[in-house]
Length: 210
Image 1 (tube, helix red, strand yellow):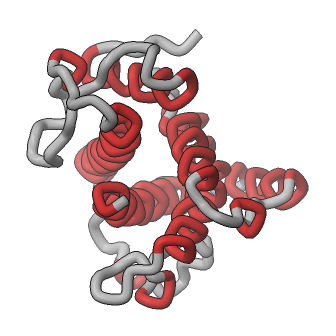
Image 2 (cartoon, helix red, strand yellow):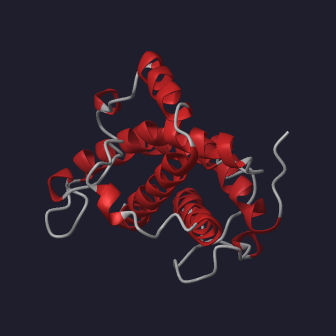
Image 3 (tube, one colour):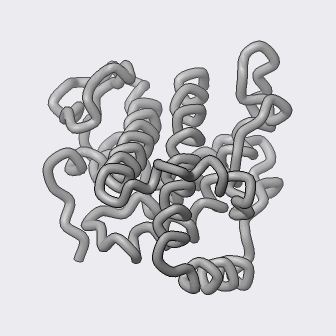
């Protein structure tokens, strides 16, 4: 069983709130300025903003956790040094948010942006599971990302338009990732965490606009 502790305990609260609604228990507002380890559940939210707060705080937790894991990887394995020459060969096809996705101001397009964010989070699933499998983490950002993907999808007018990788595609990708060894394995984990952190930075900002 996964053990949630310390800086991650309130992330479980956000997940429960997204799953079971506002009656689960209150979660506080987030300005995005606090440390990711702070417990926002100690604050009382304004009525009618609980679900928005839960989405915001879950997104911030995912962003902060991925960034911290990447920093640890860079420090312990020197994974961030000498990778620029490898970057051109990076064919992981990790989800990225571009101007045409409608997630930036000016030109924000809610439906298109939610489609990109939800689809991107679904696409990150196999990559994040690979991170967790190879580093033996006690918490799961892949689970949190999937809950957030579902939530954003349900906010769309046409949720069926979200592209979700097929089980066969995920299985093939997982097998390819598990074939990596030594330095390639370390660099790939660095790229995944780096790109997921950037993806979640935009996701966190967008959620505040909704």
